[in-house]
Image (cartoon, rainbow, N blue to C red; front, side, top):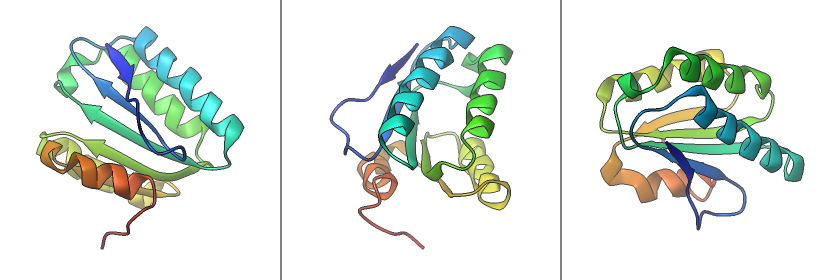
Length: 124
């Protein structure tokens, strides 16, 4: 299941994953991202993993990758919040191949991730 995180700054969108994730869950994310892009020229995106990457079906992963590619020119900031160090390390790779900034955060740093994604602070 993927649910939209409420009470985030207006210039960003965020989602929280839990349990088993299928392509239909990612379809929900895609439609919400389209609404944000319609209202703003940039995409500030936060994804909070409250589960394991193994909980995603292959179809869900492929659909998420297509979301990234379709909106490649819109990415400004994207944060991945997880306690999986492999995912945090993988997020760093996106900085070299995609426009925009990508950062991984531990769950304990969720509020920092929100502030960074909303462009309230710079890190580095």
